[in-house]
Image (cartoon, rainbow over all chains, first blue to last red):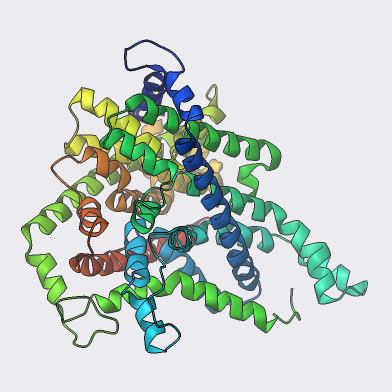
Length: 267
Length: 263
């Protein structure tokens, strides 16, 4: 019964990935070798792109965690109706096309966009701020797109904390800050870690949002891969870069699963 | 956690974060009603002109029809393959079951750009670039995990004694499946189908590489905003937001049904 799904996955999933491995090891002359990987490691341009991708992903992850925690916390303390309203506000963006959401940010952040116009009308600024085609814009957009992936696991871990532990802490005289610091926060850390992983891993491979909000000024790994394939037809370098991205992702996910167990923290 | 007061600062932070999540899309919906030649916020005149442009443009209609065709095919394919696989993964004794389960769910985590160029290189050889078949197969790979996650979630909650009772009363495996399991599983299956549809209908990265000269709706939108901001995209986006909201309402309704039937 798994057969049909397995056939599809082997043909349209495993085989294409395996082909990238072969392509990444095939030089321009058709010989096998680590040429493409060497070109990647010896080029300051590609290493710079890798570094920028990691930096942006890290900043996006921190922004998401900081923004998600209060929401997750408030969700555990509200009644059924506000809970449902907040959940809709979290889930609707999660399932709205990334393209639509990135487009919204383009409309907002452009030089003559909504945000700049509002600020100018309020006389906060005279010259339009540069909010797009730089890392700021990319981070603003990516963090918003990935935020639901941080809110859901953090909320799940906070919800699973046994309320009797907090009652016990209170009986023993712990104030609200102390209860948060010694009970709630440590018990919610697995959820925070899961949220961080989900956001970071997705941010590493993000293409649409950086391509539209960063343009040619903020090149990330996924964008280089696209350029190599579409414009430069350098399949071995593109495949090598794709392999680097894939291996980093797989190592992070498997490592996390071994350490904390993904299914335990996953809603 | 009763009797605890939530600090007003936490409420304020939550409000700001929720505004950050929701406002951008809301602004686009409002701006899509601009009556002028450009999008304005707030619109000085309100009109449906960009919606009219969308509904009367052949290229937008072609792309929409293509996306719908592909998404419907993906929904059917992913839902049937995923449901069968889920039942096998939960109910049957199979060697390497955990590896199989991980494999079926793993496309969620593989960066789409990596899978896209892999599929692009393979499709170039198989002459599948620009074909509906190619996109349907590739989108099914991406949609399969959502079906499996939804269906297995319901399966784990399902009471096995019902199936055993059916079997001991003389029903064969097929009859047990259609008469006992399917009626109980359908909310999970339908929920998986909704997410499979959305996955395909919104997908852009794979479509960018393999849709060739037959662009899907997301591909046409991407081309419309990559180098200039085509105002029609605001109207398309607003309509997509409504479709997504309806789909989520549907899945929420289905989830409530599952919770009720499985007690």
